Structure formats: C-alpha cells, structure tokens
Length: 203
Image 1 (cartoon, rainbow, N blue to C red):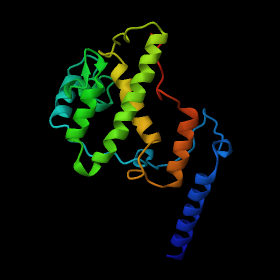
Image 2: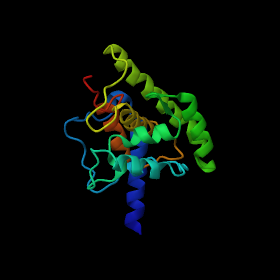
Image 3: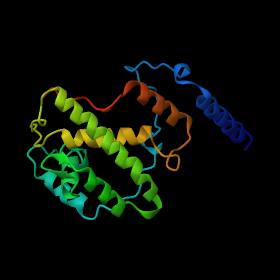
C-alpha cells in the first residue's frame, strides 16, 4: 500500500512537471524509434465516446466481405474500404466527399447523451482533417484520389485515421487518462506525426 502511494505521488509530480515545461523544453524524440510501451494500450488514453451506429457495422462487414480484396484472416473493420462504407451508410460521405453538416448532425443524434459535449471536438477533428487532405489534393492538382486495387479510394480511410489521431491529440479532459505513458505518446505524436497523421498517396 505504501509503495502504491509513492508511485502515485511520483506520477502526479511528473505530470505537473510536464505541464510546466514549455514546448522548447519538451523531450526531443527520434521519430524513427517510437517509445516502447510494452503491452500498454495507447488507445486507452482517450476514451472513445459511445455511439449508436445501428446496423451500419453489419452492413459494412457484409460489403467488405464481398470485395475481391477481402482477407478472411483479418476482421472487416481492418480493411481499407471499411471507413468509406461507414461514412457512406451514415450519410457523411456523398459522391466521395465529406459532408460536414451530415457529420455534425449524425454525431449529435447518435452519440450517447453522457458524451454529447465531446461532439464539437470530434467535429473539429473532421473539419481539420478534411481541410488538410483537400489542401493536399489541390496542391497536387487532383480532384480526388484514384480507386485502389482494394476496391475504393483511400480518402475515407485517410479521414478516419486522421480524425482518430487529431482527436487523440486534442482529447477532452473528460476522456483523457492522465498516465505517464499517455503523455509520452501524445508528445511523440505531436512531434513525429503531423497532419494529416497518415501517409499521403502520390496520386
């Protein structure tokens, strides 16, 4: 019991120290060598709000399993085309473009009441990622990304990964776990994984 109290006090002291550090004093990471977290689940640092997707996941699982690129060794949600199906079925993606009004409306209606205050943060992540990815398209003189052999454009999957990363970096205090490893993960991501937080296609 005494040891746990000491460890907790040390953790609090470290947290306070990190909060007082200026950006210039923050740890400089080797981006090619991510910190070792052993078996710690970094995804647990920012709790995912509860959202009722109805039968959409089942529809998209069936859709992905019908694709020639489907691999029975992996779950449907790991497929590149799964996010495109989710966004399309929820009305957020129309003709390959993200509809911010639909995103906002769907989240407000389907996120659990206890997590409703988180919706503006997620909407902001969507908007930030959308603008960044569209900026890349414009700079590359592209209207859209071409359909890949997997059976879809990478656009939705890029948005999905970017929104997750952006929400993680700007996680509301209500959902954030104040853990030393979580702080290290956030600092590493801030330094080494800039927007859009995913590799950009060449074309």
